[in-house]
Image (cartoon, rainbow, N blue to C red; front, side):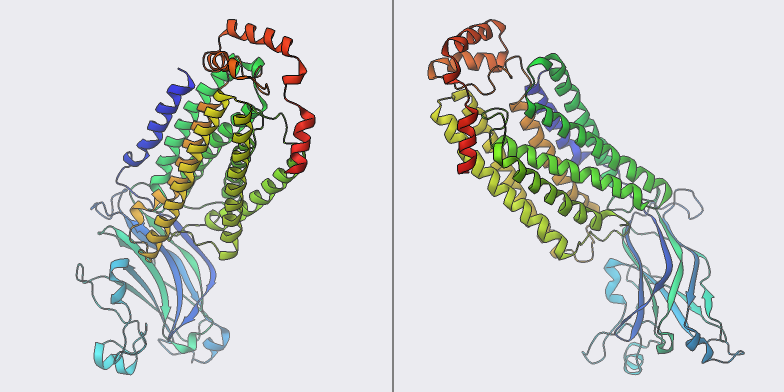
Length: 513
């Protein structure tokens, strides 16, 4: 199997990513450590989590059933709030846990006479809605009158804390579920909460949006492994003629395989334990940032003609490395913000000051890459190197298609998030993340196809061929014909250093650039 067959097989393997998904989704464990309530309108509110859950219809006692469980959930009020009540008082403060499916979000809260929407029942709303003043407004769902699900907890006397009774709520409908802890008592300002909730589906603890990605990373690991096997077999076969650029391609393939495998095991650990250790996730994210950085620098170096038209980047090396370091830092911070500690199924929304540097650097890289490609194509055209010119034109076309696809996908991603503010389409949200990994992989396969190791790689790396040598070069580059290679060596000896790639000329070019 050569690398040209690899391009078809690996791309087809990656394309299967959209068809190999089971029906199950997973969920996770949410831990709260004296989390503070915040004031929202006329209520004190704390978000307990948001996840997509699949209902399998199993009995609650069955090991594979879907449920949300409350474990050791404890509410703490301030000493001032506790001391304002008598020791013998019975109910001195109400806290409610509200669990609802995203489609029923309008069943929580209400407004009187078209005014501002309130979460808690007011005197006017008590007359209009029939709700109980001092409690959350709740209207039964059209699908199930027991939903939204409400758990009440009352403080007693002047106690500082109260424990919510451990409960396990069965999920009988597939959807995006939201949990909020709410208090309508103005005396409970400064309320905090500890404990945990367990959100689980038949498959484990992964949130619903992340569950398909675990299978996706298995598939991507296999695809990278296939590329690695075929590429490395060619690499070993022609190791004496390997170009520096081919060493960097090998590194990118290895980093891609390592990253995809690490993501799979990170998700596997999350699925089995229900928690995401910060250290493990940070390590995986760092490997991914390194892979993305090296990949971009590889494309930039190829665009400049490194290893094919010029032996070094000359005076541009320090600028390229500085750009790479800057991109790594920006990518690392953005990925940490979006992944480390992320459990909820709401799509990651990194802060604007982290997104903008990453987007700016990508735009700058694209501009530099295509500018360098234009200069490289001009050089090859001037030297009448038709074979290398054809390779670079194919590379330019592949890059142009990838940029167009990226811009189109960014537009789709913005539309997807803008039209789904409550993540109700969580079952297909994994595609947003998967697309970028598939695009990077396909572009890498194209690079492997165009710069496959061959017997003539080193021999023709920097030569300035004449037009009458193009046929011989084409045979040597595509077939690795040893006899033609010997003819070319003899011609090179006769032509001498005058036709070879001039380092001094390239240095002058670098200064002009």
